[in-house]
Length: 547
Ligand code: ADP
Ligand code: MG
Image (cartoon, rainbow, N blue to C red):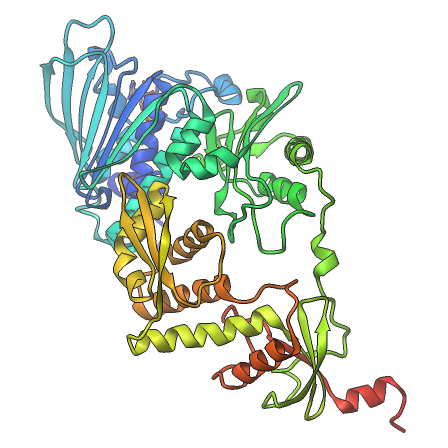
């Protein structure tokens, strides 16, 4: 094909696609505009996963009547005026792209009034053109309503996930801005339900409580470290609360919500000796530094930034998190290395060593309260008690579910559970499936539930944590088979005997007998080996008995 410059309307769509990827991008851009306008209250509403309707209203500065139409022109912005300004951006927006980009992929209605105007202005923009403009009254501030997002863009619609997933992304955006701006009052209504309302009193702990619940907010550790010209402040979780993914590490640089591998690594480093591998903390961290120290103009959605000095910010974050942790932890720490097991090179996962069954004659004993040592038909077998038990329970749960014979234990004392908006959405769609697995959560106010029942085999003492981890693992999953697997994995993981728990010989024998009955005894449901095998031949070789 010959190389040609694309027609203008194509270019405008490509550019729009970069800024506005999904409904949550619209919400993000509109909230940023409200915050840039100095709003102290922001109302957010969405319907149909944001495709039908998104409304963001604020009590900010408003737009003067004469400027309303210009705001919809590409690269029109009030926030920067010359090249020089780009080096020291202090607002969230600066490219003048959001409103025109949204208006090319949706119908946008804006009603705005500036302080010194007598009346407000209503403008309707469709396909990038103004189709209506008139005077209308409104108190100072701006409301933007976006309808029929991507209606004429089937290719883009195809890439969107279910309504629930898109709602989850929207809830995520709102929750994060509410945490970044605790002094702003956020009201959030999703599909007609009020899902979030923050106090706007400026207290981060209150904002965190509104999102993650009081239970978690109470335990979070506050940190505040100033090392001119850097300031790090926010909250981190104590090591007793851990998550199975990095998605609870949130960073705001000069109040902009960003993704950053460098900052995530700094936090992980700080927690290094306190959390087991694969476990991550919850952190809401603000980093303030002079605008010249960062470049925010590197990503279309402005979610990534570049630091002038990576080492500086890495060290600042690691040090302040570390200090926060040191302050609360006085007990001697157990490093993961102390309870980990480094297999010698000659030990192979049993699945790779060629043995096809796991026949064990004799349990020899327990190693580090974590591994079962057993004599097999051909040499030594080491079994990871947690992984093995997970495999047994995983298959048992799926079997019980398939036969609709899940054994349930009702809780004498129901457990009170508060969910953040994202997990609340996940629970809303999957509550029936969860109930089929014996997990019963009864609504108890806005995003609050009473856990009434759990599977009978559940041994977890911290049931709220188990529910959080379970819901996290279901995020984005739509296929029933996968969904059931994930529920079974999560329940198995929270019910299985843990590493570090002493077992009697009888218990070890019983566990091995059960493992032998499973369909896939060699791996745990996460895919890790349940056992390692050192064959008689390997032993002979290692001890120089083979000639
Ligand atoms: P940017 O935020 O990069 O400047 P936008 O397209 O998002 O670009 O907005 C264009 C301009 O419209 C802004 O610079 C601002 O002057 C004005 N504007 C947009 N939304 C609001 C709002 N909620 N309140 C006040 N002014 C707004
Ligand atoms: Mg903007």
